[in-house]
Length: 267
Ligand code: KIV
Image 1: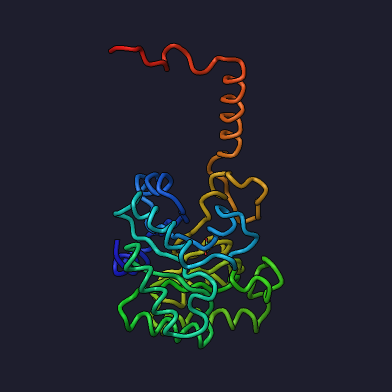
Image 2: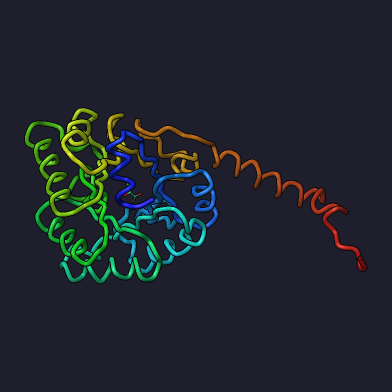
């Protein structure tokens, strides 16, 4: 999979399947399943590290987890999120952060949030240095406080026009694709038609070129989180709880380990 293959998938109308990932075991499963793109998202902050937003996530934390993902899925096109304040201040910061991502983890691309002139300037700087960039507009979690929480974006004429303009500006700046998060299906469909690069939707309806979900949400590891756009493909929290309770009860009742788990003194 390359940037060019992704553009070709859009041209052919082949849906692009993207999932987030943060560790080696799930990375292996994602690669085996043939996911098109792995995104090491800064959702890491909430779903793995227990922060209440993506804001505290550091570049070192992103790199640490991305290295693990790359070890589990060395053949899958992987994108690493640039975390909050690793690119907002200057083009130079963006270049240093994205450079570390590519050099230290081996990812093929980075993702950054926003579509205003500053974000586009960061994209141009990275693309000029040969670093592919995925954009991200609509609900942008690194601006959660400015946006007053998780809410659908782009409702109303001006707001919708701004998101369309941002997506187009990111394409003009050189992004190879753009995530559309929490926008109406109508707006996402319009943006998807207007762009030559693939749109990857999350809570953005049925007409995006691809879809992305946060893996623990999709696998039911995070059952308290059930937004309208989510479909659960497994109930891992339930299965894990049953497994853990079974282990504890077996140990307490001396049902585990059994003779079959016990080494003899000599073979
Ligand atoms: O951090 C993340 O997981 C993301 C996806 C929700 C697109 O940015």
